[in-house]
Length: 354
Image 1: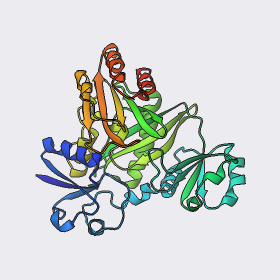
Image 2: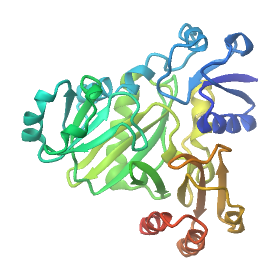
Image 3: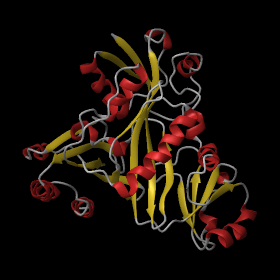
């Protein structure tokens, strides 16, 4: 039996553990403060559900581990500065950007980027946190500690957002899922839709981009690439060197989930292209209480993370899969009545995507 230790014990580690059971892989999600002496580290493959971590006894031990897959890639992609530099090196399209080092840069930034600029912390800053939308009149809102710790990007008038989840193994084989169409509200992913018929307009461009990244890094495992859709094609927004929220639909909508695919890739197991036969909708459950009435709908696959419910916190997700658009539509309509009011717009958006 193969053994995998996952650095991080949040919902992604939990879902990796669940995916490992039918594959005969023992997966151990571990907290950052775990005692390395109590874990099967020496005989395990090491992966991570998080991009960055503090120095602890465990992380210092893992830093020396020869089987820590992508060990040296995580810090490179966790920092937006070297991540953007990598994309520039590969000639891959992104929003115009630059490091933000001093308040003296602002006149030139607005001259180059226009009236609106997006500031992002180099590390962290996900789910609407650590990011600012600034004009020349609002730059005083930016905390002083952001200088030398952030990048600034031109605001993009994008048409929509999509992501591509793919995986590469050590032999260099790469497989992809169909692109996923995504809706964010207040910087948090609320809904995703994926189709069995590949979006040919964007699928090939996205695969070409992500293939270049995976091969350049000699990356092993699942990676997600988030993109803006513009009139001129795709612009890469973010890379995630791990399983990703926008790939959660694969748990019920694909023959191989992104979690099982990641384990296959890092463990050297067969990695065929996943089969997708029906439209999938994923609804993130954010800061809402568990409601078992959701299960009265036959299409609903509930994934509850068993976390304390807090405003803005991802506490679960619902997957719905069907080749019948009318049935999917009817289920989503009924489900909306059992979700908080703010989900109505996200559900209507999802319906418009198929």
